[in-house]
Image (tube, rainbow, N blue to C red):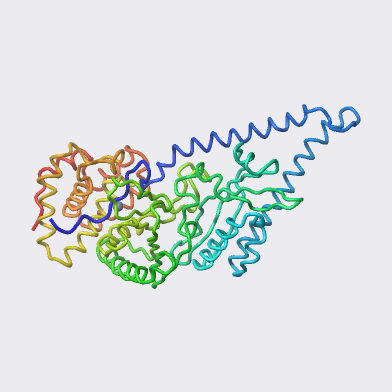
Length: 456
Ligand SMILES: [Zn+2]
């Protein structure tokens, strides 16, 4: 009974919050696309060479000039777009709306209106660093059909730093469509590529409508514009939750927490639209280098918390202390097994409950997990299908961490966590780390849980 279990992320297929492994499928897709791009460019140039000369020119001349003209046009376009991107970043940094709107297609009033909202949001976030750069061109016949022959669809990397929240600059991606209107490049769409980007792209807190940003020394809350009272309440709860994480988890983490609580079901890589998903919030990674950018897995920089729109009234320090535990360990690497990640987050949240309601409630819950949840499983819950599992995998993960704390002490468990998060890249590494630090394997940890008698 009672205190509802704190936080759970939506099912893994859409939102596995830990570990860069979820990007692997995506990487394969990107690799294929890149291969496709290279192929297409070659094809085009071959076509250009093969095409009969439009004007009469000396034999052979066309073969030489055509490709170089194409190359020159591509270089000129690249420079023009780079200039626009620099201008956009500069406009935000200098709070110059006219400059920001200067390169938007003047014929597209809806896009201009959206871009005004985006501009205001970006200014409110107060980035210490902001920059956009062109990644690769993408080809989509539908987009060309919609915008014409000059269409240039390009993946864009947005690199930014929110003061205190991002301890280093982080990267997110976008897709921009440019067209050339009488010799001048303008931005004509910003969502043509959304479907082909990584999870959560172009669904950042600032992409979804006008926001309000509320600040405390170590908390930043993003709510709908005018939802000030809720924003203040979230800031207060998150501040308390942060104190709990500091009190109950040994790692000294000095960052600030970003909590996004919008009236939106899809924010970043969180998906709350599915009615079957009863999750109150999730913590999703930020990347200093996106998967596939420098390394296959990318580099996790930290995490932001996204609150389910239907749960915004019930955000409390218990829920937030669970999520903040994820945030405060996110930059370690994200390779820890989910039972350890969720178990640690539950451990911290339940220590908070214990502090409020005494040991009775926690003892009762622990016994329920032992009596009911444990027999429903045959092993420690694995990463695969963790969030789809109908059994109480959170309860069992919590029990495993409670057991390890009793056996090793909290500091040693935190060290085990760090080692796993940094180096648990595959099952063999995880087995080695767990065994060397606890004398247990996942199998013997599981059997130990079955005979575990909590100290009361
Ligand atoms: Zn969690």
